[in-house]
Length: 424
RNA sequence: GGAGGGGUGGCAGAGUGGUCGAAUGCACUGGUCUUGAAAACCAGCGUGUCGAGAGGCACCCAGGGUUCGAAUCCCUGCCCCUCCGCCA
Image (cartoon, rainbow, N blue to C red; front, side, top):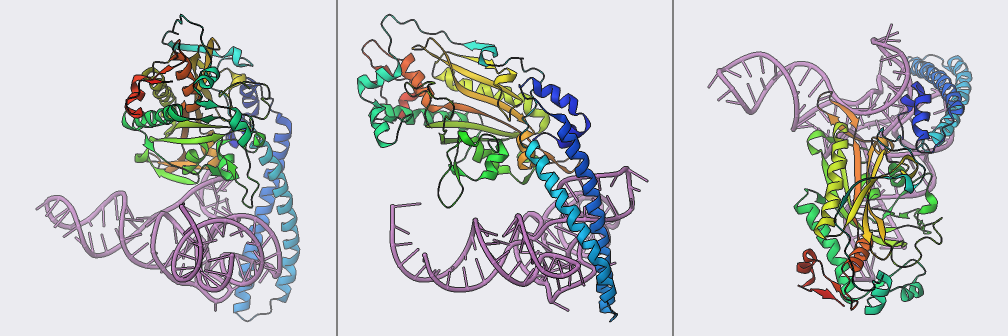
Protein backbone atom coordinates (compact mmCIF):
# COMPACT_ATOMS: atom_id res chain seq x y z
CA UNK A 1 0.00 0.00 0.00
CA UNK A 2 1.18 3.49 -0.77
CA UNK A 3 1.34 6.10 1.93
CA UNK A 4 -2.17 7.60 2.03
CA UNK A 5 -0.62 10.89 3.09
CA UNK A 6 1.50 10.99 -0.06
CA UNK A 7 -1.58 10.35 -2.15
CA UNK A 8 -3.36 13.18 -0.37
CA UNK A 9 -0.54 15.70 -0.70
CA UNK A 10 0.55 15.09 -4.27
CA UNK A 11 -1.82 12.80 -6.15
CA UNK A 12 -0.65 14.07 -9.54
CA UNK A 13 2.94 12.99 -8.89
CA UNK A 14 1.79 9.56 -7.74
CA UNK A 15 -0.40 9.15 -10.80
CA UNK A 16 2.48 10.12 -13.07
CA UNK A 17 4.85 7.61 -11.46
CA UNK A 18 2.25 4.84 -11.71
CA UNK A 19 1.81 5.46 -15.41
CA UNK A 20 5.21 3.87 -15.97
CA UNK A 21 3.65 0.67 -14.63
CA UNK A 22 0.77 1.03 -17.02
CA UNK A 23 -1.58 1.82 -14.15
CA UNK A 24 -4.03 4.65 -14.56
CA UNK A 25 -4.80 6.24 -11.22
CA UNK A 26 -8.09 8.07 -11.24
CA UNK A 27 -7.45 10.88 -8.82
CA UNK A 28 -10.84 12.60 -8.75
CA UNK A 29 -12.81 9.91 -6.89
CA UNK A 30 -10.02 9.51 -4.38
CA UNK A 31 -9.95 13.20 -3.63
CA UNK A 32 -13.74 13.33 -3.39
CA UNK A 33 -13.88 10.36 -1.00
CA UNK A 34 -10.96 11.66 1.00
CA UNK A 35 -12.53 15.06 1.63
CA UNK A 36 -15.80 13.39 2.65
CA UNK A 37 -13.96 10.97 4.88
CA UNK A 38 -12.16 13.76 6.63
CA UNK A 39 -15.31 15.78 7.13
CA UNK A 40 -17.26 12.81 8.48
CA UNK A 41 -14.44 11.69 10.68
CA UNK A 42 -14.07 15.07 12.33
CA UNK A 43 -17.85 15.16 12.77
CA UNK A 44 -18.11 11.66 14.18
CA UNK A 45 -15.22 12.23 16.56
CA UNK A 46 -16.67 15.43 17.92
CA UNK A 47 -19.96 13.61 18.53
CA UNK A 48 -18.03 10.90 20.30
CA UNK A 49 -16.23 13.44 22.46
CA UNK A 50 -19.57 15.01 23.35
CA UNK A 51 -21.11 11.64 24.15
CA UNK A 52 -18.15 10.65 26.28
CA UNK A 53 -18.33 13.74 28.46
CA UNK A 54 -22.11 13.51 28.80
CA UNK A 55 -21.99 9.86 29.68
CA UNK A 56 -19.48 10.66 32.31
CA UNK A 57 -21.68 13.33 33.83
CA UNK A 58 -24.59 10.92 33.84
CA UNK A 59 -22.46 8.54 35.77
CA UNK A 60 -21.57 11.22 38.26
CA UNK A 61 -25.17 12.40 38.60
CA UNK A 62 -26.29 8.87 39.20
CA UNK A 63 -23.61 8.38 41.82
CA UNK A 64 -24.77 11.55 43.51
CA UNK A 65 -28.32 10.19 43.57
CA UNK A 66 -29.73 12.80 41.20
CA UNK A 67 -32.46 12.20 38.66
CA UNK A 68 -30.82 11.30 35.37
CA UNK A 69 -33.92 11.02 33.19
CA UNK A 70 -33.61 14.51 31.63
CA UNK A 71 -29.93 13.90 30.88
CA UNK A 72 -30.77 10.66 29.12
CA UNK A 73 -33.31 12.37 26.92
CA UNK A 74 -30.73 14.95 25.90
CA UNK A 75 -28.11 12.45 24.96
CA UNK A 76 -30.47 10.31 22.90
CA UNK A 77 -30.56 12.70 19.98
CA UNK A 78 -26.80 12.85 20.07
CA UNK A 79 -26.64 9.11 19.83
CA UNK A 80 -28.73 9.06 16.68
CA UNK A 81 -26.57 11.69 15.02
CA UNK A 82 -23.42 9.90 16.02
CA UNK A 83 -24.63 6.60 14.62
CA UNK A 84 -25.52 8.29 11.36
CA UNK A 85 -22.17 10.02 10.98
CA UNK A 86 -20.31 6.88 11.93
CA UNK A 87 -22.22 4.73 9.45
CA UNK A 88 -21.48 7.17 6.64
CA UNK A 89 -17.85 7.44 7.66
CA UNK A 90 -17.29 3.71 7.61
CA UNK A 91 -19.03 3.40 4.25
CA UNK A 92 -16.74 6.05 2.75
CA UNK A 93 -13.71 4.49 4.39
CA UNK A 94 -14.57 1.10 2.91
CA UNK A 95 -14.77 2.60 -0.56
CA UNK A 96 -11.47 4.38 -0.04
CA UNK A 97 -9.78 1.25 1.27
CA UNK A 98 -10.96 -0.72 -1.71
CA UNK A 99 -9.19 1.75 -3.98
CA UNK A 100 -6.05 2.12 -1.87
CA UNK A 101 -5.46 -1.63 -1.48
CA UNK A 102 -5.64 -1.99 -5.25
CA UNK A 103 -3.02 0.63 -6.14
CA UNK A 104 0.34 -0.92 -7.08
CA UNK A 105 3.69 0.13 -5.69
CA UNK A 106 5.56 3.02 -7.29
CA UNK A 107 8.38 1.99 -9.62
CA UNK A 108 11.88 3.25 -8.87
CA UNK A 109 13.39 6.06 -10.94
CA UNK A 110 15.81 3.58 -12.55
CA UNK A 111 13.06 1.29 -13.82
CA UNK A 112 13.11 1.46 -17.62
CA UNK A 113 9.99 2.42 -19.51
CA UNK A 114 8.21 -0.29 -21.47
CA UNK A 115 5.13 -2.46 -21.65
CA UNK A 116 6.22 -6.07 -22.01
CA UNK A 117 9.11 -8.36 -21.16
CA UNK A 118 10.64 -7.43 -24.50
CA UNK A 119 11.37 -4.02 -23.01
CA UNK A 120 13.32 -5.41 -20.07
CA UNK A 121 16.94 -4.28 -20.08
CA UNK A 122 19.84 -6.68 -19.72
CA UNK A 123 22.26 -5.59 -17.02
CA UNK A 124 24.78 -8.42 -17.02
CA UNK A 125 25.60 -11.85 -18.34
CA UNK A 126 27.60 -14.74 -16.90
CA UNK A 127 28.97 -17.88 -18.56
CA UNK A 128 29.05 -19.09 -22.13
CA UNK A 129 26.33 -21.31 -23.58
CA UNK A 130 27.91 -24.64 -24.45
CA UNK A 131 28.48 -25.78 -28.04
CA UNK A 132 26.87 -29.16 -28.65
CA UNK A 133 28.29 -31.46 -31.33
CA UNK A 134 25.18 -33.59 -31.39
CA UNK A 135 21.46 -33.16 -31.79
CA UNK A 136 20.26 -31.84 -28.42
CA UNK A 137 17.07 -32.88 -26.67
CA UNK A 138 14.88 -30.86 -24.39
CA UNK A 139 14.28 -31.97 -20.80
CA UNK A 140 11.03 -33.71 -21.74
CA UNK A 141 12.72 -36.04 -24.21
CA UNK A 142 15.69 -36.52 -21.93
CA UNK A 143 13.36 -37.47 -19.12
CA UNK A 144 11.26 -39.74 -21.32
CA UNK A 145 14.37 -41.46 -22.61
CA UNK A 146 15.54 -42.38 -19.14
CA UNK A 147 12.02 -42.93 -17.88
CA UNK A 148 12.76 -40.71 -14.91
CA UNK A 149 10.38 -37.89 -15.76
CA UNK A 150 6.75 -38.71 -16.42
CA UNK A 151 4.01 -36.24 -17.28
CA UNK A 152 1.39 -38.76 -18.41
CA UNK A 153 1.12 -40.49 -15.07
CA UNK A 154 0.92 -37.10 -13.32
CA UNK A 155 -1.98 -36.21 -15.58
CA UNK A 156 -3.68 -39.42 -14.57
CA UNK A 157 -3.30 -38.92 -10.85
CA UNK A 158 -4.02 -35.19 -10.89
CA UNK A 159 -4.22 -33.37 -14.21
CA UNK A 160 -2.22 -31.22 -16.58
CA UNK A 161 0.77 -29.15 -15.46
CA UNK A 162 2.05 -31.69 -12.97
CA UNK A 163 5.06 -33.98 -13.14
CA UNK A 164 6.34 -37.16 -11.54
CA UNK A 165 10.07 -37.72 -11.09
CA UNK A 166 11.69 -41.05 -10.40
CA UNK A 167 14.93 -42.39 -9.04
CA UNK A 168 18.08 -40.46 -9.72
CA UNK A 169 16.22 -37.51 -11.16
CA UNK A 170 14.12 -37.17 -8.01
CA UNK A 171 17.39 -37.44 -6.11
CA UNK A 172 18.97 -34.66 -8.14
CA UNK A 173 15.92 -32.50 -7.56
CA UNK A 174 16.28 -33.04 -3.83
CA UNK A 175 20.03 -32.45 -4.00
CA UNK A 176 19.45 -29.10 -5.66
CA UNK A 177 17.25 -28.02 -2.77
CA UNK A 178 19.84 -29.16 -0.27
CA UNK A 179 22.63 -27.44 -2.18
CA UNK A 180 20.77 -24.15 -2.31
CA UNK A 181 19.81 -24.18 1.35
CA UNK A 182 23.32 -25.12 2.42
CA UNK A 183 24.88 -22.37 0.35
CA UNK A 184 22.57 -19.66 1.61
CA UNK A 185 22.77 -20.67 5.25
CA UNK A 186 26.50 -21.48 5.34
CA UNK A 187 27.90 -18.85 2.99
CA UNK A 188 25.36 -16.04 2.77
CA UNK A 189 24.24 -15.79 6.38
CA UNK A 190 20.57 -16.70 6.06
CA UNK A 191 18.59 -18.46 8.73
CA UNK A 192 16.52 -21.37 7.48
CA UNK A 193 12.82 -21.36 8.30
CA UNK A 194 10.06 -23.90 7.82
CA UNK A 195 6.58 -22.44 7.44
CA UNK A 196 2.98 -23.40 6.69
CA UNK A 197 2.21 -23.98 3.02
CA UNK A 198 -1.36 -22.82 3.48
CA UNK A 199 -2.10 -19.26 4.53
CA UNK A 200 -5.04 -17.08 5.40
CA UNK A 201 -6.30 -14.10 3.43
CA UNK A 202 -4.64 -11.55 5.74
CA UNK A 203 -1.24 -12.93 4.85
CA UNK A 204 -1.97 -12.72 1.12
CA UNK A 205 -3.19 -9.16 1.54
CA UNK A 206 0.03 -8.35 3.33
CA UNK A 207 2.31 -9.36 0.50
CA UNK A 208 -0.03 -8.10 -2.23
CA UNK A 209 -1.55 -11.21 -3.85
CA UNK A 210 -4.93 -10.13 -2.52
CA UNK A 211 -7.31 -8.50 -3.15
CA UNK A 212 -6.48 -8.25 -6.86
CA UNK A 213 -5.01 -11.59 -7.88
CA UNK A 214 -7.19 -14.22 -6.27
CA UNK A 215 -7.62 -16.03 -9.60
CA UNK A 216 -3.90 -16.90 -9.59
CA UNK A 217 -4.25 -18.80 -6.32
CA UNK A 218 -5.54 -22.17 -5.25
CA UNK A 219 -8.15 -21.67 -2.59
CA UNK A 220 -9.16 -24.53 -0.35
CA UNK A 221 -12.78 -25.51 -0.35
CA UNK A 222 -12.87 -26.70 3.25
CA UNK A 223 -14.32 -25.08 6.33
CA UNK A 224 -11.29 -22.86 6.76
CA UNK A 225 -10.76 -20.23 4.06
CA UNK A 226 -7.11 -21.07 3.38
CA UNK A 227 -5.05 -20.71 0.25
CA UNK A 228 -2.08 -22.75 -0.98
CA UNK A 229 0.98 -20.51 -1.08
CA UNK A 230 2.11 -19.31 -4.51
CA UNK A 231 5.57 -18.67 -3.01
CA UNK A 232 7.26 -18.90 0.39
CA UNK A 233 7.43 -15.11 0.25
CA UNK A 234 3.89 -15.04 1.63
CA UNK A 235 4.32 -16.97 4.90
CA UNK A 236 7.91 -15.83 5.46
CA UNK A 237 7.28 -12.12 4.97
CA UNK A 238 4.18 -12.35 7.14
CA UNK A 239 6.29 -13.59 10.02
CA UNK A 240 6.70 -9.91 10.87
CA UNK A 241 3.11 -8.87 10.25
CA UNK A 242 1.89 -6.73 13.16
CA UNK A 243 5.31 -6.86 14.78
CA UNK A 244 7.71 -4.18 15.92
CA UNK A 245 11.25 -5.59 15.93
CA UNK A 246 14.32 -4.23 17.69
CA UNK A 247 16.87 -2.58 15.43
CA UNK A 248 19.56 -5.11 16.32
CA UNK A 249 17.55 -7.91 14.70
CA UNK A 250 18.09 -6.20 11.34
CA UNK A 251 18.90 -7.12 8.72
CA UNK A 252 16.83 -10.25 9.20
CA UNK A 253 17.81 -12.72 6.50
CA UNK A 254 15.63 -15.80 6.04
CA UNK A 255 15.77 -18.63 3.56
CA UNK A 256 12.93 -21.06 3.07
CA UNK A 257 12.33 -24.06 0.88
CA UNK A 258 8.71 -24.67 0.01
CA UNK A 259 6.44 -25.98 -2.67
CA UNK A 260 4.61 -23.28 -4.61
CA UNK A 261 1.13 -23.61 -6.06
CA UNK A 262 -0.10 -21.45 -8.91
CA UNK A 263 -3.30 -21.71 -10.88
CA UNK A 264 -1.64 -20.25 -14.00
CA UNK A 265 -5.01 -18.81 -14.92
CA UNK A 266 -4.61 -16.82 -18.08
CA UNK A 267 -1.55 -18.68 -19.29
CA UNK A 268 -3.38 -21.37 -21.26
CA UNK A 269 -1.25 -22.50 -24.13
CA UNK A 270 1.94 -20.98 -22.71
CA UNK A 271 4.78 -23.36 -21.90
CA UNK A 272 2.45 -26.33 -22.08
CA UNK A 273 5.31 -28.70 -22.87
CA UNK A 274 7.41 -29.95 -20.01
CA UNK A 275 8.13 -28.76 -16.54
CA UNK A 276 8.63 -25.04 -17.18
CA UNK A 277 5.22 -23.95 -15.98
CA UNK A 278 3.59 -26.22 -13.40
CA UNK A 279 0.79 -25.88 -10.90
CA UNK A 280 3.21 -27.17 -8.26
CA UNK A 281 6.94 -26.59 -8.02
CA UNK A 282 9.64 -26.29 -5.39
CA UNK A 283 11.46 -23.07 -4.70
CA UNK A 284 14.11 -21.84 -2.29
CA UNK A 285 13.22 -18.29 -1.36
CA UNK A 286 15.41 -15.57 0.12
CA UNK A 287 13.69 -12.90 2.21
CA UNK A 288 15.28 -9.94 3.95
CA UNK A 289 13.83 -7.36 6.30
CA UNK A 290 16.02 -4.26 6.43
CA UNK A 291 16.22 -0.65 7.47
CA UNK A 292 14.85 1.59 4.72
CA UNK A 293 18.21 3.12 3.82
CA UNK A 294 19.69 -0.32 3.21
CA UNK A 295 17.17 -1.82 0.86
CA UNK A 296 18.78 -0.72 -2.40
CA UNK A 297 22.15 -2.17 -1.51
CA UNK A 298 20.56 -5.34 -0.13
CA UNK A 299 18.69 -5.99 -3.36
CA UNK A 300 22.03 -6.00 -5.21
CA UNK A 301 23.45 -8.32 -2.56
CA UNK A 302 20.49 -10.66 -2.74
CA UNK A 303 20.65 -11.05 -6.49
CA UNK A 304 24.31 -11.96 -6.13
CA UNK A 305 23.27 -14.67 -3.68
CA UNK A 306 20.94 -16.09 -6.32
CA UNK A 307 23.64 -15.71 -8.97
CA UNK A 308 26.09 -17.67 -6.82
CA UNK A 309 23.91 -20.76 -7.13
CA UNK A 310 23.88 -20.53 -10.92
CA UNK A 311 27.63 -19.95 -11.00
CA UNK A 312 28.40 -22.90 -8.74
CA UNK A 313 26.23 -25.03 -11.01
CA UNK A 314 28.07 -23.52 -13.95
CA UNK A 315 24.84 -22.55 -15.69
CA UNK A 316 25.05 -19.56 -18.07
CA UNK A 317 22.64 -16.80 -17.17
CA UNK A 318 21.86 -13.18 -17.63
CA UNK A 319 20.22 -10.59 -15.44
CA UNK A 320 17.60 -8.15 -16.67
CA UNK A 321 15.92 -5.27 -14.92
CA UNK A 322 12.19 -5.38 -15.48
CA UNK A 323 10.57 -2.52 -17.32
CA UNK A 324 7.62 -0.68 -15.78
CA UNK A 325 5.00 -2.72 -17.61
CA UNK A 326 6.49 -6.06 -16.56
CA UNK A 327 6.99 -5.11 -12.93
CA UNK A 328 4.80 -6.87 -10.38
CA UNK A 329 2.08 -5.24 -8.31
CA UNK A 330 4.08 -4.92 -5.07
CA UNK A 331 7.58 -4.35 -6.43
CA UNK A 332 9.41 -1.06 -6.79
CA UNK A 333 12.23 -2.70 -8.73
CA UNK A 334 12.82 -6.25 -9.93
CA UNK A 335 15.77 -8.05 -11.45
CA UNK A 336 15.03 -11.31 -13.21
CA UNK A 337 17.80 -13.88 -13.46
CA UNK A 338 17.41 -15.90 -16.63
CA UNK A 339 19.16 -19.22 -17.22
CA UNK A 340 20.23 -20.50 -20.60
CA UNK A 341 18.01 -23.26 -21.97
CA UNK A 342 19.67 -24.89 -24.99
CA UNK A 343 16.46 -26.46 -26.28
CA UNK A 344 14.75 -23.09 -26.45
CA UNK A 345 17.91 -21.31 -27.52
CA UNK A 346 17.18 -18.54 -25.10
CA UNK A 347 17.34 -17.38 -21.50
CA UNK A 348 14.38 -18.21 -19.27
CA UNK A 349 13.44 -16.78 -15.87
CA UNK A 350 14.75 -18.79 -12.95
CA UNK A 351 14.76 -16.14 -10.23
CA UNK A 352 13.06 -12.85 -9.58
CA UNK A 353 14.60 -10.46 -7.04
CA UNK A 354 12.61 -7.48 -5.88
CA UNK A 355 12.71 -4.53 -3.56
CA UNK A 356 9.26 -3.77 -2.20
CA UNK A 357 10.44 -0.84 -0.11
CA UNK A 358 7.74 -0.15 2.52
CA UNK A 359 4.83 -1.28 0.32
CA UNK A 360 4.35 -4.72 1.87
CA UNK A 361 5.44 -3.50 5.28
CA UNK A 362 2.70 -0.89 5.31
CA UNK A 363 0.08 -3.45 4.29
CA UNK A 364 1.12 -5.78 7.08
CA UNK A 365 2.32 -3.26 9.66
CA UNK A 366 5.81 -4.73 9.80
CA UNK A 367 7.93 -2.25 11.73
CA UNK A 368 11.18 -1.75 13.57
CA UNK A 369 12.02 0.62 16.37
CA UNK A 370 14.41 3.26 15.13
CA UNK A 371 16.81 3.99 18.02
CA UNK A 372 17.39 7.52 16.71
CA UNK A 373 13.74 8.47 17.10
CA UNK A 374 12.67 5.65 19.43
CA UNK A 375 9.58 5.39 17.25
CA UNK A 376 8.27 2.43 15.25
CA UNK A 377 8.96 2.86 11.54
CA UNK A 378 8.11 0.71 8.55
CA UNK A 379 10.65 -1.87 7.44
CA UNK A 380 11.68 -2.50 3.88
CA UNK A 381 11.24 -6.00 2.45
CA UNK A 382 13.35 -7.59 -0.27
CA UNK A 383 13.06 -11.08 -1.65
CA UNK A 384 14.12 -13.30 -4.48
CA UNK A 385 14.21 -16.89 -5.59
CA UNK A 386 17.41 -18.62 -4.82
CA UNK A 387 16.35 -20.48 -7.03
CA UNK A 388 13.24 -21.99 -8.59
CA UNK A 389 14.16 -25.66 -8.20
CA UNK A 390 12.13 -27.22 -11.00
CA UNK A 391 13.52 -24.84 -13.57
CA UNK A 392 17.02 -25.31 -12.19
CA UNK A 393 16.62 -29.05 -12.70
CA UNK A 394 15.52 -28.44 -16.29
CA UNK A 395 18.56 -26.22 -16.84
CA UNK A 396 20.92 -28.84 -15.42
CA UNK A 397 19.35 -31.58 -17.54
CA UNK A 398 19.58 -29.64 -20.75
CA UNK A 399 22.96 -27.99 -20.23
CA UNK A 400 24.65 -31.13 -18.89
CA UNK A 401 23.17 -33.58 -21.40
CA UNK A 402 25.39 -36.00 -23.29
CA UNK A 403 25.02 -37.50 -26.75
CA UNK A 404 23.71 -40.73 -25.26
CA UNK A 405 20.94 -38.93 -23.41
CA UNK A 406 22.59 -39.19 -20.00
CA UNK A 407 23.13 -36.17 -17.79
CA UNK A 408 26.42 -35.38 -16.09
CA UNK A 409 25.95 -34.48 -12.43
CA UNK A 410 27.36 -31.02 -11.64
CA UNK A 411 30.34 -31.20 -9.27
CA UNK A 412 28.63 -29.38 -6.42
CA UNK A 413 25.74 -31.85 -6.38
CA UNK A 414 27.83 -35.02 -6.30
CA UNK A 415 28.49 -35.06 -2.56
CA UNK A 416 24.75 -34.75 -2.05
CA UNK A 417 24.00 -37.61 -4.43
CA UNK A 418 26.26 -40.26 -3.00
CA UNK A 419 29.05 -39.42 -5.42
CA UNK A 420 26.91 -40.12 -8.46
CA UNK A 421 28.59 -38.76 -11.62
CA UNK A 422 25.92 -39.28 -14.19
CA UNK A 423 22.15 -39.74 -14.37
CA UNK A 424 20.91 -42.03 -17.08
C1' G B 1 -14.80 -36.22 18.07
C1' G B 2 -16.65 -35.40 23.56
C1' A B 3 -16.23 -32.26 28.36
C1' G B 4 -14.46 -28.04 30.69
C1' G B 5 -11.24 -23.32 31.29
C1' G B 6 -9.20 -19.11 29.04
C1' G B 7 -7.57 -14.85 25.46
C1' U B 8 -5.77 -7.51 29.05
C1' G B 9 0.47 -3.29 27.57
C1' G B 10 7.68 -6.50 25.99
C1' C B 11 6.57 -10.37 29.90
C1' A B 12 3.79 -11.70 34.41
C1' G B 13 -0.78 -10.35 36.31
C1' A B 14 -5.33 -7.19 38.64
C1' G B 15 -9.68 -5.13 36.88
C1' U B 16 -18.65 -4.68 41.42
C1' G B 17 -21.17 -1.67 33.34
C1' G B 18 -19.54 4.77 34.88
C1' U B 19 -12.58 9.86 35.32
C1' C B 20 -9.89 2.46 33.03
C1' G B 21 -5.89 3.42 28.11
C1' A B 22 -6.23 0.33 32.10
C1' A B 23 -3.52 -1.34 39.25
C1' U B 24 0.84 -3.92 40.61
C1' G B 25 5.45 -6.57 39.70
C1' C B 26 9.43 -7.63 36.26
C1' A B 27 12.05 -5.87 32.09
C1' C B 28 13.62 -1.35 29.70
C1' U B 29 15.31 4.17 29.55
C1' G B 30 17.08 8.59 32.18
C1' G B 31 18.62 10.57 36.93
C1' U B 32 20.32 10.65 42.35
C1' C B 33 23.75 8.07 45.40
C1' U B 34 28.86 5.44 44.64
C1' U B 35 36.05 5.56 43.34
C1' G B 36 33.26 2.02 39.97
C1' A B 37 29.38 -1.54 39.95
C1' A B 38 25.30 -3.68 42.46
C1' A B 39 21.45 -2.36 45.69
C1' A B 40 18.24 1.53 47.05
C1' C B 41 15.54 5.81 45.70
C1' C B 42 13.23 9.37 41.96
C1' A B 43 11.23 9.90 37.09
C1' G B 44 9.77 8.03 32.36
C1' C B 45 8.03 3.95 29.61
C1' G B 46 1.81 0.82 24.31
C1' U B 47 -0.03 1.68 19.04
C1' G B 48 -2.57 4.45 15.48
C1' U B 49 -5.03 8.84 13.98
C1' C B 50 -6.63 14.22 13.82
C1' G B 51 -4.47 18.90 15.52
C1' A B 52 0.42 24.40 15.12
C1' G B 53 -0.47 23.32 20.22
C1' A B 54 -3.45 22.28 24.27
C1' G B 55 -5.66 18.29 23.50
C1' G B 56 -9.49 15.05 20.90
C1' C B 57 -10.72 10.15 18.96
C1' A B 58 -9.88 4.83 18.42
C1' C B 59 -7.70 0.24 20.06
C1' C B 60 -7.96 -4.64 26.41
C1' C B 61 -8.11 -11.67 20.15
C1' A B 62 -11.61 -10.42 15.71
C1' G B 63 -16.56 -9.05 14.01
C1' G B 64 -21.48 -7.94 15.41
C1' G B 65 -25.16 -6.60 19.44
C1' U B 66 -27.35 -4.48 24.26
C1' U B 67 -26.62 0.45 26.88
C1' C B 68 -26.64 7.42 27.91
C1' G B 69 -21.97 4.69 28.87
C1' A B 70 -18.63 -1.89 27.57
C1' A B 71 -11.96 -4.49 29.01
C1' U B 72 -16.38 -5.73 32.01
C1' C B 73 -23.03 -8.17 29.61
C1' C B 74 -24.93 -11.09 24.95
C1' C B 75 -23.99 -13.58 19.98
C1' U B 76 -20.59 -15.46 16.20
C1' G B 77 -15.72 -16.63 14.64
C1' C B 78 -10.52 -17.51 15.50
C1' C B 79 -6.78 -18.99 18.80
C1' C B 80 -4.71 -21.20 23.37
C1' C B 81 -4.85 -24.58 27.73
C1' U B 82 -6.62 -29.18 30.62
C1' C B 83 -9.02 -34.10 30.58
C1' C B 84 -11.08 -38.34 27.60
C1' G B 85 -11.12 -40.69 22.72
C1' C B 86 -8.57 -41.18 18.01
C1' C B 87 -4.22 -40.51 15.11
C1' A B 88 1.37 -39.57 11.58
